[in-house]
Length: 320
Image 1 (cartoon, rainbow, N blue to C red):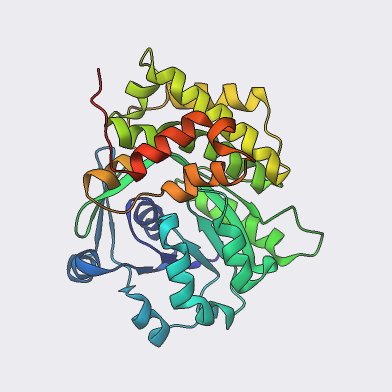
Image 2 (image 1 turned 45 degrees about the horizontal axis):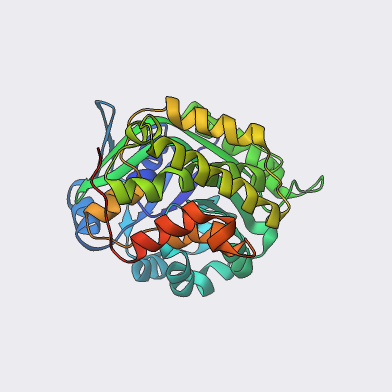
């Protein structure tokens, strides 16, 4: 199979891991990064620690201004956005005109359910792919170095729905599924990406905000006698919010997602890592996405409302 030409916008914990896997498999990668992380990658490549395995990626890396100077969107078969969802608006402000000038499809691998509509607003639905990284934890440990753990699956699909026969995204999705899987990234293509994105939001809203508030990892939260019940209730509130988007998750989805995160490795969530490092939290794209979709969020989602309010005010709890 012909190697893919890929642009990874955001070589952090998630994007950096997938980029290293794909580069190791022989695909052509270009990365974006910023600040000290960018400087370190330029000097010594991207170094990834994945569950005791070392992966190196020597791909070219640019800031966004330099990317526009050196490349066109159609230099790539696929453009992947792996930034924090807090950066979606800013990156589209920076690169929107550049992205709109090409035809390359854009795949979001971000938290939340609101990134794809923003991307589609710039490049059009026919160039937009939705995606999610499943059962993976990852973060930058120091400039140029990334730590990742978990099965690190990818689910992707045409946004917002399965395309009609003849849509070029169908052939590309098949190629991506094969290429990613052969690179060691278990990948599946779905014909209902909005459903999968909402299922992931059920988990994210259950554990991400509460972990940032309490300082506990996912296993400690889900197995805690009190916090475990709060996790479940915040997940249930997310299921209710899904109805506003016509996704209509069920009790079965809720129980499956709670079992999945309860059985997963004990990981520090991305929101907990961000809070420890003093970085902005993806609160609006996770808890905010739930609260915005309910008629009276204070009464319809009291657990999400409270945890969101405490985090917004800078509060924290001491675990027991």
